[in-house]
Image (tube, rainbow, N blue to C red; front, side, top):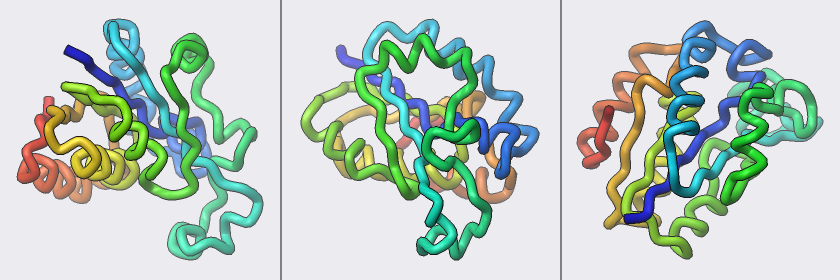
Length: 170
């Protein structure tokens, strides 16, 4: 059985940077535990923008510079360095979901795909939906104790939709 762990956007700007929020700081140890115990492939996504972010459609809707490539806010906490070094793949995405990630899933079959990271109702949600479309026969799991949102209401709405789509919520 092949398993994949996907760590979505656990980057400094979402933890305690320009878009940081308290709940994001509380899940770090849970994500690190998942990484430590996972024996199969691991991939990471990085929200990745440039200096023109505010001129993009997303930047017009979320007008806060964040995750500017190679800046401190774009990076993950240093505790993740060893896992990044050994990752199967790292996806740099300029919007919520990664089509490159979806294409990777089409080319690499995984029986089980597990998700964690930030933000639960935005980028995590988007990449789960892409995975569902790319690999409809894979079992998809979201680790609720290893994801967070700045809005409990939006997070719960995302959970309800994911559950309706057959995503397992642990």
